[in-house]
Length: 398
Image (cartoon, rainbow, N blue to C red; front, side, top):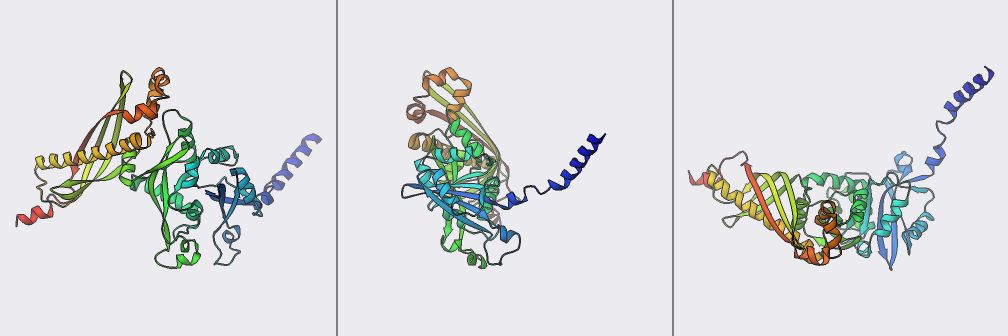
């Protein structure tokens, strides 16, 4: 009975003595929300964006920044991190990391060392976004302040998420997904790029946020195309849209087409892309079918939209426009970059392993660039908006 009482007393005391056992440890951590990786003098420059603890606790002056950026340089990622760590009075903690920004120059040297370093870090949750800086250093992107979010890293993450549905040229790629594509056979990764619009130097200053128009903003741009872990180049916006449609990663897209030498536009929704791949001897053949519903949002030509034949004619124009878009995207990846970013080789690997083992060494350099493909597009213009006719047609009836 005496032993039971002692155990109860110990348990009771432990309830009150362990509640804040790690307070000092947490107080010694530097919460890292963003990481940038650049190349300078043929060495890695690693930069960490760290939340300003004093600012968040309300102990600092109002003009102090919400976050600070520390950088380190070295011949390897780990040596650059060690150099960075020597400048920080607390321990960098990346469990709350939101975004990893890799510069174009660093990505062209290969990203395997960068991702390997973060994969080995036990604090990393592997759920942060990965993005490429285009036209500027990664640290410049990380330092560009936003009037809408307290941390630039948070602004970038929110920008990626908000553009996921509104901009069909954006790739939403978390670290774990990027790693998965690096490890799989028959597919290469792609990443969205981000660039600075405006004065990059002024965009770092807190004073720039006092104006109604920020001195600089970050903007999600085109898609970067990789072969293995090396960045080869960029796809333009239209090609990026085509890439996402072919990958079946688009919810909606604004598609433009010609109408009597004028322009018209429709929003495509319920987009479904089905791909079949077969072989004629050793020659791969693709059959791609894209089905979508369309709603007219703009038409600058004289058409009677109450005529079903006219609607079929307009649908055909949009189908041809979409077909050209997809064809250009395939050509870019297969002919210019020789990089299977669509995962057609991965389809062969999963469905016909024997065939894949026969052709895998020839796939990207010889077979994929010569691939035969057929694209079929089916667009149903189910909506003409709230006005049955075009303005020009209605005016003609007066």
